[in-house]
Image 1 (cartoon, rainbow, N blue to C red):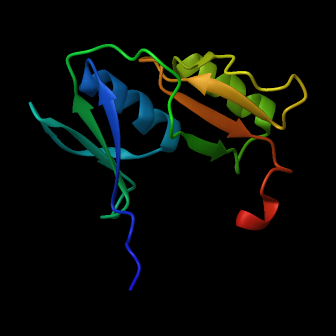
Image 2 (image 1 turned 90 degrees about the horizontal axis):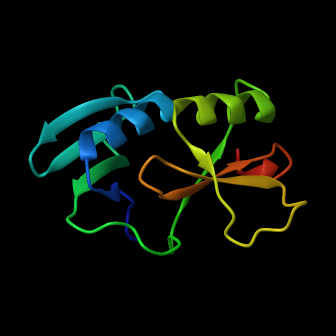
Amino acid sequence: MASRLTNICIDAADPLPLAHFWCAVLGWDITEASDSGVRIAPDGSTAPVIDVLPVGDAKRDKNRLHLDLRADDLGTDEELDRLLGLGATRVDVGQSPDAPWVVLADPEGNEFCLLFPSVHDDAR
């Protein structure tokens, strides 16, 4: 049997506000919170979850792993506006101007992408 994805971990200087950001982005809920971190998950789900973990140092470089998001209920432009309104920012990591995605960062600088509908359409 192959390994199974159970947790995605995001380092944060202040885990609770970052967990709230990701809950708003994904429509998830906080399922656990303590000094050792905050866990978020979709309602009724046990895996995979996102653990937002406290770290003492600031993010310095581009992520080596990131999340790709797709707006299924809104158009890409509307979802981009929503994400920016939640506190995401646009970032340039060297993507081409005509890339079929937008690179964003969460409030602590962790990059993620908003895909346009044509990217990975068969992955749905």
